[in-house]
Length: 290
Image 1 (cartoon, rainbow, N blue to C red):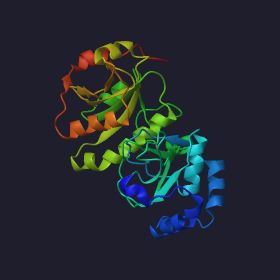
Image 2: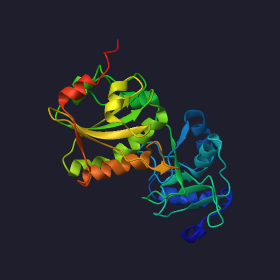
Image 3: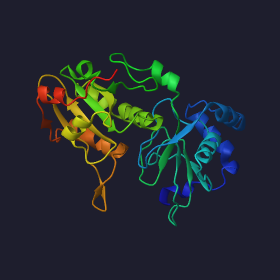
Image 4: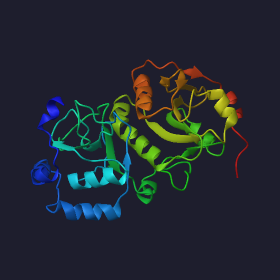
């Protein structure tokens, strides 16, 4: 498949070569990759990111091709035939193609390039963020759910969270945020941190259960869930919703790509904000939950 012709289909035959490349890149790969894979098997669970994602959030990268293969198979997917090389046009480290074509027969991809980027036919495979570690890294402020890194926006917390004249990225869904969704948000937060800092926009990341906030759901009127919005709080709130792709004229749930597009639209100055009075927003919240 073009530049990927340097790849391989037999992972074991090229394992030592890839480990040497990993060491040369300063990634401190272990000499005994099979032993490392065994350790990973007992210590980690894995998650597949949406197709087109750039890679894994910092700290969740898979470390060896052996672990990559094991991770893919643990998700119930096929890893062979595989590809291994260094190429900046693919996601870094571990990714998978679930539907090979004549132009691209490889499933597992192991990329040792020092930087990479997303491609529509590849889904990065990453380590799941341990919930205890995520909780310990949670930023201060309003209380969050017991298993979430991100504070929950609700009738109980909205005055504290939205009272300031600041920017917020709010993930909208029905029910409690999942570990996979948290990892997705972590990846987005990591990807956009530099851009937000450069424009002097300190953004707080939240999530909102619209199943519990029906009046607010009616006010915001997202085309589908999950969705997302960026809101400027304070005395004169304004917000913009993510754009949803459609299939058979039906809106699809917002994925990582849709939220990234939302953030880029805001940063680029092209977002069409909807203004809402602080009083109207305040009255849309449900009665405080105990």
